[in-house]
Image 1 (cartoon, rainbow, N blue to C red):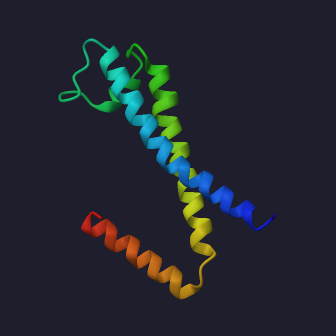
Image 2: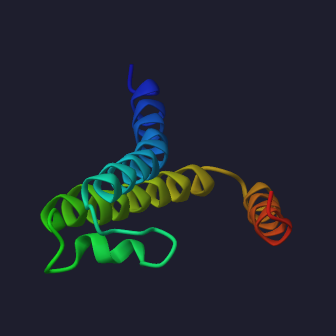
Length: 105
């Protein structure tokens, strides 16, 4: 029973890495549509969370903060998973992740 608990926690942390960006994209799209003067081509995304924005609280909480928390959770899950590997496997994982980042996956 204890061996499945870390696996379940890692799955939850991995799901955070999926849910956070999706939620951010949805909030960004919905609030961009709701703000009648917002133009995503000429304005920055962060303007949706500015002080004078009509739905700033929603963007700051559901957009920016939730995205940040979910990325920290994903990073924690990746760290835990990589630290369970042997040293050669860790180095190979880091090299592969670096190569994917350079090539653009």
